[in-house]
Image 1 (cartoon, rainbow, N blue to C red):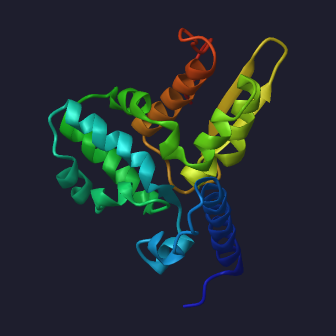
Image 2: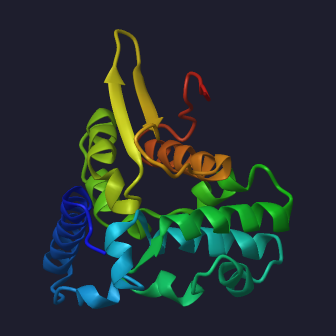
Length: 212
């Protein structure tokens, strides 16, 4: 069946974003562009939300803390854990959501997302991590996170709102049919806090966190 024009345009937009990200990294590291056929497990992934596979490396590392076999848990979610080592590879976001459910059930730790976020390295975030490291201020860094967040996860919509006495970072999922798990949200916020601490004060902490 033919795809709606809107889906095709969205897929092209995602692919161009990934290619631009790869081009930046290739120029920095003097490597050839990645073979785009290797970035996606199947052509159908061009038409569905995806997540940068390297971001799951922090999940695999965290599972070692619980004595869990990462490969088997990834397999239960329909994912190949070895893909986290492949530059530019992507997982279907739907499968990543299932992976979060699997590891939450296996570890019985509702705070596992916080640990995963603490273990996330900027290099795993590719263009997003590079943009953050090169930011001259925290505000610039947050603005770049807002701009490049969908390189890490195509359904991740971030908004940076400047107020009189604070800056508000909002994770908005209202436009997506998929919903990230609470643990995935915890990981995302934990990553942001860790990155802010790396650039400023090691005791940096949000004024407050609101869930809705």
